[in-house]
Length: 457
Image 1 (tube, one colour):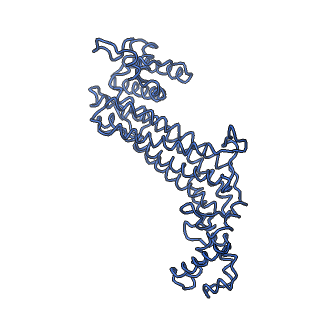
Image 2 (image 1 turned 90 degrees about the vertical axis):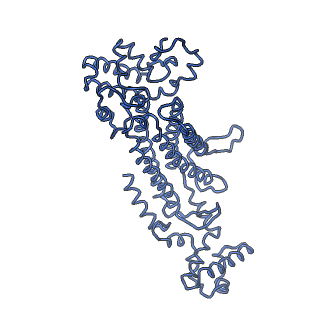
Image 3 (image 1 turned 180 degrees about the horizontal axis):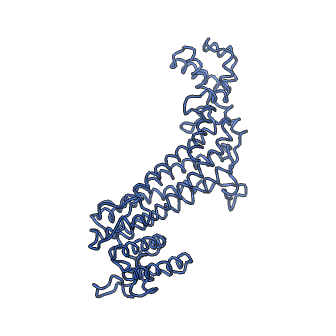
């Protein structure tokens, strides 16, 4: 088969060399974006009288036929034609004859592929943002149902202070909100058109880059042709933002895994998001949460892979840049799978309020309440801390908790302690009193939920 660029060559590459260099196995995902870009390019060429109206109409008619075939899955791509661009150009020539060869006037595969990827990410990032929003909605739903459900809060994976479970869940809402904002802000860089930059230096044809950008829905164009075809920072930014999003989901997944263990029994996942064991009949594994936690590594790998590919590349286009696509596609696929899975896990999980209630009454997470109580009565906090620590140590030796100590023994440790201390030490009281802005107090959690509902509409 004659190459569409083969005029200068006297020998053909062997098939295995062609297969090594071809990208059609993965860049066929860009088929609709490539056809969309070509359609805008032809309309612009005809408007600028670079093609006649008749030629433009012929090519546009052929491209429409290819769109129909692509949507029906009727296009059979070939590695002999290397990539999505040359495959589609070959299909077009077969469809409408030699005039199809005029499609490539005033452009290069270099600006063509960059345009395709901008279009692809522009569409996918919008879908990912919608997925985050749906996930946030599930979090708000569960958090609102459990504002006054008290659970141990942890630092160093040790019980620290009692908190509202709704407050704990809302932590991830705000992390996701920042992820959503980062992705939204990255659209400024994604929403630029490289089309018309040519191979590296523009073109001698009197093209209208603003027109083709407008036809494709871009908000602007690259101002430097070398920059337009040679950088992939818009993909790097996406991969970086995706890595942070996956990191947040991985942390949440880890808590889901811990909470649903027999050791915690704080939640139970719906059967839809769990699997069993091939040998142990009793097992209910949190495989979807574990997979999301595991897939975080591959998203990080895609980011570092492209960073490494770009490091040291001279201007302008180099074949190395063919390696920019598979990681991007894989990350998009991973995010668009992980987000609805996580949304479903959160929306359908059963919260074991009885286990949480038992946990907060069987620890020393209310110790800070006693120290704060003494400090509020005028005792320097460091002394209050020491008094409380000694009482905790005494309780551990006896197998008691602070609430079990008689008032006389508490007053022996500090005469400032009165019988109202037993109410102060109640987990629900401890949580409700922490009413500073952003705190776990029930009023503050309701306030957070109000803000969250405004953000997700």
